[in-house]
Length: 339
Image 1 (cartoon, helix red, strand yellow):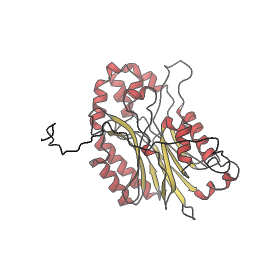
Image 2: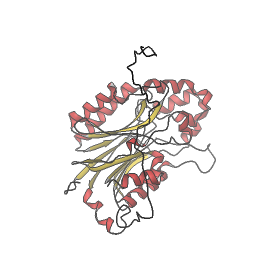
Image 3: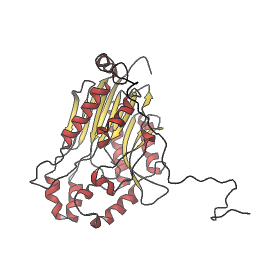
Image 4: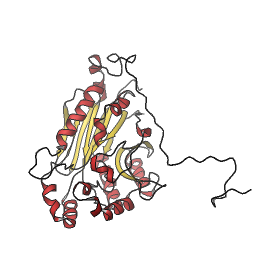
């Protein structure tokens, strides 16, 4: 770990995609990367599955009514080594900025398999972290496959310190969070959707994303003594109109569900910097990573305030693959071996 901890300027993009249009959404991301770099940001963060959409339709209608939207999302999802990712990587290299981007990731083994994924791109254009959401939440299971532990990585950088992240509900998973804390995480990224309806209008208890994100990230930052970035999506008029035109009955659900926001948390759990709530924009915050040190005197849960002889955690970082082939003879590619 570097002896000198840096001061970091972070940008959180509380923005909407060009809904279900990957090419245009990637170009919007490139523009925002340049804007953040122009405002002296070292890191720019995008929301959960920003490219090309968060599949909110699963909360609004029966699965039997959404086949076309699932097929469209699968078609517009991207490969981790595809041309869209190359464009984003080049934008980071050109602007000399780190970017953390939420994507719908396609599988090369299955045309219908999609992961809720996030990618940390370095200021040289290299992919530093590739994470797939461990467990899709509630109705998200209708769209995404479960991820794996390969992305539970904290990347050590000279410019940003030690950086890691989790997607949405994972920030409430104590074991996932501890796995990042135990790697010395100093900058924690959390990505969220624009809204998450769980009740019909008039019913109490609808999911409040602002409250949920603040509670979870404050807890993580207080426990891990790290800085937190909350970056959420935004439902713009185009997204709302698209969904309402398909099903006018969903308008009241969309219009009465709390919208999310983007903001920042310090190592004591306090909110700092800008915030962008229920509107489109970029929030900025300057963070002095030296402030991660002092609170460790009180509660260092991966050091002196832990009992490793009592508690043990093991993390499997294997990338899950659908099949492993073994053979003592070369195959012809025609489904059989030559004798």
